[in-house]
Image (tube, rainbow, N blue to C red):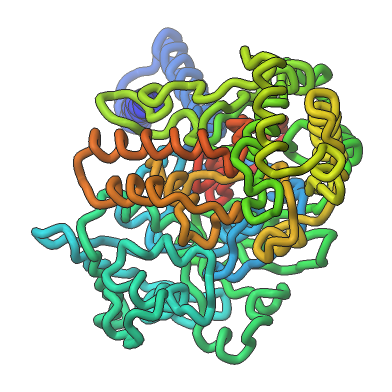
Length: 602
């Protein structure tokens, strides 16, 4: 960040210098007047000619400077020279999966979030710095009361894509909508900072006017928290807090945001076409308040699940950037961009299953997998095997990250020092406690994963290791992302692999509260009173050390019980055309923001 500021300063100084030179050279008209009075000599004519050449050179250099792409990221895209931009501003990428839901108050997945971040505008919009800035989104300004519980947001003049004004009433409606128990949103817990939100969601109060969200007028939103929370503003980048259209929700019901013409937009782009399981096309939204900063005219999101097809389309120029599948790492190893993400990948055990309810069996399943070997062989060591719940990079205290304070390895598996003897002992104790045999454990035991060939390869290794190290045989079940979400929500699964949680804000709480007993996103259906107490204790204090230390103790309980098996801290392996510029890629919240993106001439 300091480097980018230095580069901007350097460019400013360079620009001022070039303007000064231009101004000096501009006196040539005056010189010409003087020359008419004097007798011209051959030398004076030569000097005048040299001055003219210098002026032409300066002008040419100035044009080149104007046409040069800025170094690093810029939010000042409106001033980019057209000379550097491709005539066709169309970005083509692979979405990978069908977006399950584009209703911001119902959506729970990262695929949909990619679309929502490009088509909707919340009170804030984070750029490449990841900082919360006034004026970055719908809120041009805000104030905070002395007791740090009441925010008063001033909203800008802006329209929805159909020209209807966006108002503070849209935000009040949307935020109260997610708190409505009838909607049963899995992300209602994100609003619990707001006064009476949790009580309303749980039916303890029924009057929505008691909730701490109120539109004072069309452009003023007042939000009252139950208690001060320093992370509240950063949460507002999450799609949960994006606005919805009350008139459309009431008219369309469950069909809201389910088709291209039913998806409203107040963001940089709007949904122009949605061919389910095939593609989603976004177009620039001319009604967007900052439309001058949006350079892209169109984004083509393809939905391609076959890795060979994805790489083939990149090779032929049909895709502008891709996540590189495992089997192509060697081919592109020198071109990869590795982008760390605050993203835990894990296997979810159904803790209500007749066998998987046993803590020792879950631990045996986790410890029987040589996760380090998988990533060394499959990913050439580019991915990071996980032995804790909270990923690297999440803030802690005293200048250290949470992971540095808590320790990097909270458990061992057969690849990191857990012996075969210890594994056999643990597994046999589980069988004895359950009164079951390996054959009975294996009967009907499914591992659910995605439909991509890459997902299949990883789960096949998992299948082989379970059989080799425990004798347990599992069946692989591949499903679409939407089906997997539905099955996890209904409890129709035994084990899922490839589950992932990317942080909603830069604090360990975004991972720790996920596994609390009453969190609807706790798909493992796990409950531990001491874990809940420790996480709640962290919620109730502003002391950074006490907060983190409470969560560290809670994480130890989580890992000891192993209701979920964390196995990877995700690193995005990106292959991108050099002419694609200015995409916001943060470790969390905004992983591919395209508001300021543009395509260079190539």
